[in-house]
Image (cartoon, rainbow, N blue to C red; front, side, top):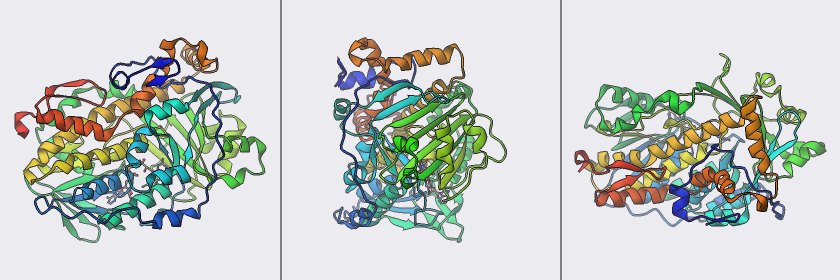
Length: 528
Ligand SMILES: Cc1cc2nc3c(=O)[nH]c(=O)nc-3n(C[C@H](O)[C@H](O)[C@H](O)COP(=O)(O)OP(=O)(O)OC[C@H]3O[C@@H](n4cnc5c(N)ncnc54)[C@H](O)[C@@H]3O)c2cc1C
């Protein structure tokens, strides 16, 4: 692959690069010229009604397994679809209404695009209803002076094979629901899981608030940050002596860099609101992310398709009792906005005053390490399984990777007694990847929100390199500034599963998500 003047092979990208400042991957100044995007929301119905999928695959009589997926958002639906593709019976339970009412936006980095584009209709959807992100502009929080710029060069994105999009959540969800329905996934909305029944060696089951009991071969917790399945799994794990706890020894404080709590808010603004405001119009005319670094607080803004502009505010610590994790309600207010935006330039405040939808969240760290429990046949995916910093690049991408990886690994399932072995494989492939991403996103957040002082000065100096001509930049610096992004963007969750499967077959060590060897055989005798 080629980055600026540097040629990097794929294997070097995934295995060999290290970073100095994990996400100040900021270099490059070429301004890309693109024709303006021209989409219309009315195309939505047309796209979704297109015949995008061949009929559901015939169920394989040799492996009729039943999967219960609790949570029908991005992680749950990706898992459900890919499991059903392999011929398994899949039921998805979600407590919310089927109609997605939110107007939030989701970041779709290349590692997520790579997976989504394998689904029927998704390539068109991302292109027609999303915004292709052309890079990031860093503005000094108070003065709005440009302090850095990263441009996603055409040639770099071409090498990666996928673009970075921002896409409205409701449009993505509608298409995933449509695909699941077409292929024969059973979807049950307004069906909250109230309790979970598991016992060693037994098939797991859940009981809904309506009193129905639903039993399956594997219970998948895709139920987000307040996961009921995670509570059960953690309890079971504490009661048992599971060998798959090997990574739990990693220091929680070391991983979380001393951060205990992050508070975030996401605001959705209709782009029509910008018409009478030339200084805001400038923001919406750009297809780049705008990043305003503050002191322990960060604001970002980006367009998300033709009709939506999203602002996020994220800060560490300082949560108050009134900060709660709310569902994604339309028109929710955010009473504590003033202290959050106090240190930003007037445009950020103006943006918030125009928002029609808001979502606030508290994220508590340390994070979950336990994502599978083989004796009771449970697994966690998406936000239920990890804690990617709110408002970061990879929240949804790791959730989607989880869903795809789970479906891929269980495509090998032919008998119920293989479930523990495949869960072990899932854990081996996914835990390292999600922990590396959590650490990188949190590290990036800490660096970008340095308070005034020498560390911030050093950061700004490095950011400043991005404003000089890339041809003048030393190759090493160019490589270092891109390295962390490339490791994240270049990842292919399906390939990682295939590699694990191949290595496991020949009883060879598996390389985890960081490109490091785990040092022990995937096929420990316990699972043979
Ligand atoms: C309605 C909705 C809108 C969102 N909009 C945005 C957005 O605009 N921008 C953004 O960045 N992120 C948004 N998110 C969050 C985003 O989807 C996640 O942060 C991330 O993508 C991880 O997805 P996930 O599937 O792991 O978890 P989530 O998206 O959090 O999904 C969890 C699902 O589990 C369901 N659930 C929880 N508990 C139970 C239970 N006991 N029984 C049954 N079902 C249960 C929830 O209703 C939810 O649908 C939204 C989430 C939801 C639920």
